Image 1 (cartoon, one colour):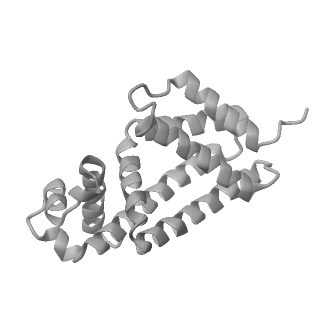
Image 2 (image 1 turned 90 degrees about the vertical axis):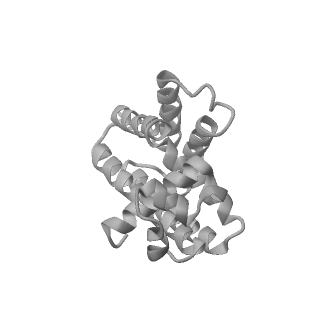
Length: 194
C-alpha cells in the first residue's frame, strides 16, 4: 500500500467486511470504522471495485508479513519446532487473526461474481503457495509444489471449519490443533533419518 492512510482505510474496510459482510461494505461504513471524516474513503478509493481491490491488496500484504515471520521462525527448525510454530500461527489466526479470515471469506464469495477480485485472489494464492513450496523444499519435501497446495488446502479447511463451519461454536483445542498440525507436517515432510 502506498501510504499509512491507504493502509488505515484498507484495514478498516477489512474490519467492516468481517463485521458486516460484503453488503455492509460501504464507503461511509469504512469512514466510520477508520474514524475518518465522511468522504475520506471515497477520496482514496472512488468505487466499490477499487475498495475491494484495496482490501485484497492489504490482505495479501498482511499475509506476506506473517509468512515472512513464519519463515524466520522455522529456518533450520526440526519437525517439533516446525509443528509448534505452525500450530502457533493457526492458533493466532483462530484467535486474534479471526477477523481477517472472515474478511477473506467475504472476498472469496465476492470473487465468484467479480472476475477482477477473483484474479487478484488467484494470483496472490499462487504466490503464497509458491513461497510455501520453497519452504517445504528447503525442509526436504519430495514434491514441494504439490505438497504446498495440499498443505494450504488442509490449513484452509481447519480455519474455515473453526471460524465459520461446523466447529465455530466449539473450536479446536490446543492439543487437537497441535496433533492436526503434526499430522500435516508428517504427511509433507520425510522422517529424519538416523
